Length: 434
Image (cartoon, rainbow, N blue to C red; front, side):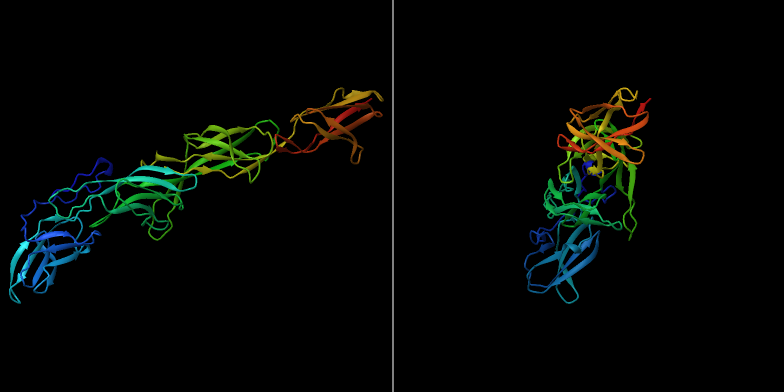
């Protein structure tokens, strides 16, 4: 019997495996079959001979196991698959006891293999926004000889395996029969490595390939305040979080590296309970540093964050294939204040008693009642309500006595399209009277 040549996708998992010898001629009187559908034991049968019999498991001409049956029968025995070493050529010999010390040959079975033959290959990975992972896989390798009475098609139950958080072990996450097969894995701590385990009649085999399931880390800085409709700069860095080299008995480390050449989106919301909405896209990350910048135009107080989309089947630095889950920066609040476009006297120098006109223009262009104040040498004193109409206000009053007098506007909070705009107090506006 010949070992199957695995498909290219299996990356020659079992390269260097044994080459089977030519199958021995089998006595049709000794037959082999599976004891039941669980494939946990091999049933050896031979014709009734009313004698005690000894059943030998022969590997490469050497007996490695034997079991005796009492006379007059039954002339059948079930041998657990755990008896047979994996990846060998096996024959079953049956001999009848003719005396306490002598036996005669009943016959030999066909030579069969105990190859663990199927290599799992993931052909689809889809990280979901709820942190679950959808995947689909197949097994490469087929029964290699129809004459082998124990060869099976892909009917076993295999499934995905993941690296353990501590040490260098693996754990099976799900059991799914057949090929192709698919499942959705529950959220688990990332990053980790993923593979496929083939649970076969002769043992288990972990896939020759491993896939990385990585995370993304997004850090940002954004000013706490911004003037209405006046751009402020959000800047940040995107990093890929990958599993590091494992050490027995110790938590598996992670490796953070700049992750560039990808596109991000900017999201915003009006409150901590409001839904996030996209306000900008196509934010490019520097290929070598992972850094990025984007202008944010405040049109009301909101929270902002950066969303880095996840992707399946990406090529990571090590050359391994895998999937990357989406990344999110922490939410940052940008408080919008009025943008002061004008705060001045039209003529800052006048004679006593002459009209002095003070003006204010702000964004947003709302209708708001402001308070005009004057510095009396000790404190700011409110002297007049001045109304903004579409963001503009003017007030004319007789100039006081000679000297310099400071004025200012206090503008209360407002809203713009339902978003808060924080109130402001302008700087001092000086009137010179002489």
